[in-house]
Amino acid sequence: MNEPLTMDQARRVLQRIYGYPDFREGQKQIIRDILDEYDTLGIMPTGGGKSICYQVPALLFPGTTIVVSPLISLMKDQVDALDGLGIPATYINSSLTGSETSRRLRAAAAGEYKLLYVAPERLETDMFATLAERLDIPFVAIDEAHCVSQWGHDFRTSYLAIAPFLRRMPHRPRLAAFTATATENVRTDIVRLLALQEPQVHVTGFDRSNLSFSVLKGVNRDDYVDQYVTKHADQAGIVYAATRKEVDQVHQQLKRRGIPAGKYHAGMTDDERKQMQERFLRDDIRVMVATNAFGMGIDKSNVRYVIHWSMPKNMEAYYQEAGRAGRDGEPGECVLLYQPQDILLQKFLIEQSVSSPERKQQEYRKMQQMIDYCITQNCLRSYILSYFGERPEEGAEAARCGNCGNCNDDSEVVDMTLESQQIMSCIRRMNERFGVTLVAQVLKGSSNKRVLEFRFDRLPTYGLMKQYPEKTIVDMIQLLIADGYIGLTESQYPVLRLLQPAADVLRGEKRVMRKVRLVKRQTRTGDELFDRLRALRKQLADRDGVPPYVVFADSALREMAEQLPETEEQLLLVKGVGQAKLAKYGAPFLDAVRAYAAESR
Ligand code: ADP
Ligand code: MG
Image 1: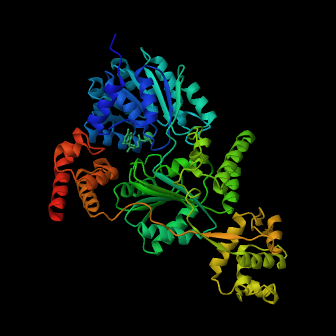
Image 2: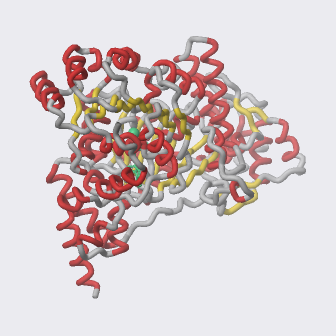
């Protein structure tokens, strides 16, 4: 019998190799159970730190741990990162030539790796079966385990091969499955289809306290994105849109304004996508406009903001995408731009893509929960945490996190009752038969052909709001839709209708207030040393052909810039600096810090 492994040993590995002082709360429980030889299911959000949950036990166990992972890019990222830490690891998937595969299998058979990443399809091959018989495999980790479930969003048939593979093994290893998807269906599928034995299930870490969340209703999205991206030009960010068409549109528009942006969606060739992704990872382009096709393989840790140009289909999708901000623990901003038309689009997408009535109903329910998030007045973080089954902390403050758009609402409130009345009465005089554009044109006093055709220039509301740009009038109408004063019919050409609360406004019994929010700059920048260290990082990363965050995370550079380490010992105290990183990159960074310190004395 081996001595049982302790958390102290695990913590020492974390400190020595990864350079982190301690595990996060959720990681502790999961690693504890894995070391105690339980099958484990870890449900943790994107960026929560799942990799360390299986990598640290893998380093403590004798033999080679197998990690099943669904994506080539994901495996490559992980192995690059492990290389950077000095941990012997490799991957086997379809991106390798036959001879390279054989070479790696031979090295694996000789026990040269602590971690072996494989694509699930590989488990079915004879070569791999032979290897598995010869190898000491104490532990198998299944990453992105929701891929085994048809209820999940990334179903892979090949994940169904995992359980038979494990059954064929002479000694069944310990198993741990990881995912960010928390729904009940997916959870039960994982346990059943991967044949986990009495697993310990942990749902943790859904709170990402470094991220701020906000939902903006009725803003002009194009203007907002332009302004935001321009103000944050030196930071990496992602703008998610719902369809390829939206992506092309937003991307075009940024380009027109001279902002270098990448784009990514399923309509592009593999090569184009790969190139875009690579440039983004290397900080060659700062902002990526993308559909949800972009992301699962992206472990880029210094993404500072994620803007949703429109409402995603459900909270799982939203949180996964938003969660790509701030993986390094530095502040990140997540903004969702909501417009009621988003609902029509999402309904359309559900109708198009889902056929089973049962499934459809579920999708509609989840969409409604997404809408609820967009319109709730309560703390957005509490909403997220309770959605994912994690109880927000007890106590009075718990209901308000202090770091979301609803808790921190410092926007200015402007009375727009008069404008609302003008808009509403115009809609009424046009007999509630026209859409947003035409109503705005009438209020603006436009002499557009359709306006004149319908003789709307004779209405008393014609030109009533001529002091405003037409775009501003459209924005105000959107806001009244979002706030439930005006409805949109669900037809191909949606028509504006007055809803019940509009009557109170028209009678002057209810005032309409509008929040005016300024694009704020929440994240810190501008620190000169930080910028220098970042440039140095880019240079070293390009030299070594790796993405910059593999050299050091933003958070590590930030700490260096604050603590000014001048010796190796001091540098080791910085989070994210372990022995291997110190050996590989310590000297140039220490030089840069010393030079800076000398100049500023
Ligand atoms: P996930 O797979 O859950 O999306 P990752 O495993 O990629 O997340 O981890 C996200 C980031 O968090 C990585 O940059 C990782 O190095 C960092 N991280 C993980 N655990 C810790 C920890 N205990 N202390 C500090 N940083 C951590
Ligand atoms: Mg991961």
